[in-house]
Image 1: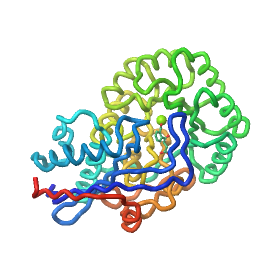
Image 2: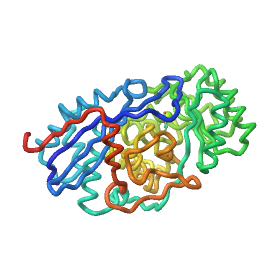
Image 3: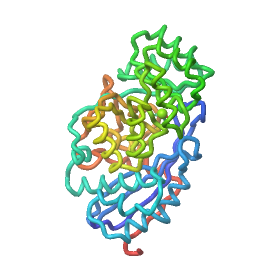
Image 4: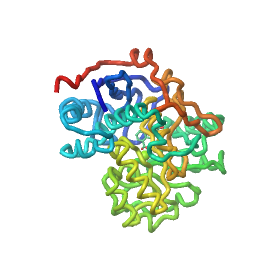
Length: 371
Ligand code: OSB
Ligand code: MG
């Protein structure tokens, strides 16, 4: 692919409003932007989306930097390979660290698509010209949650996801249902429950939820199967899924009926394409998950959502839901619950250089000739 250099930068920005889950309140966000540059000066972009601390996955900004700096970038330069499909093989000696791998894979796939002059989604058989999308409500109080739903409804999001935990769940869901009886609604528990609370969770069946996301622990697949047998509400797994193997296990056991696919958590485009293929064959609905990310990751998510197996609205919101200014141009906008898919090569969005520069905390360049 004639890569000349790879550039890393850590960026940081405050969220417009705090993002509250029972595990953590996120007020500011860091990310690593990976830029892969070829000898002709074309640039591919990827984004590492771990949090600054390991509350959601075990990775952090610092562990991703370490993996990229000390292992992934040196291996990428020192190994002979010709197509980004080969990257999982190039990196196979590195266990997990999926978010670090995903960011570098994204940058190299974007660059490859730009070299081929095709839209990235098309490389994976995507065909949609627009995608439907949902909004996540992670508010500080019940009143705020209700007013956020009202506000987001003006944008026409096609599905609403509310963060819940055992202390607020029934009250919050009842309040939403009495104000918005027909709202396409789901709940995300981020692992806040245990299997001995199955009777409590059974009460959720009355709220007509589209699904409940990750009710039980982040490391569990077996107990979710037991819980799913007890509930009418479909279970969707998020945290439990790190690979196509996890997806197969969950299907074999009946642990869930739906998956949210986060490219970053499973290691990038290759793994995402494999999971998409498996779910398509087994008729399992998928949607694209979110990580409160900046525009580069959002653009990759839009491309992913163009694949036909993503049959449900995902967590890809407008850039302006979280940011004063995003790092891509144009920013991602949602109209009537839809995002139009670009058709420019690669991720299809340009980088807003000024915004990227303004948000940069530190950066480093790696030149191939030094390896
Ligand atoms: O559990 O799906 C989750 C954001 C960060 C970490 C975990 C999760 C989320 C979201 C998506 O809910 C929010 C978004 O990007 O809009
Ligand atoms: Mg989730």
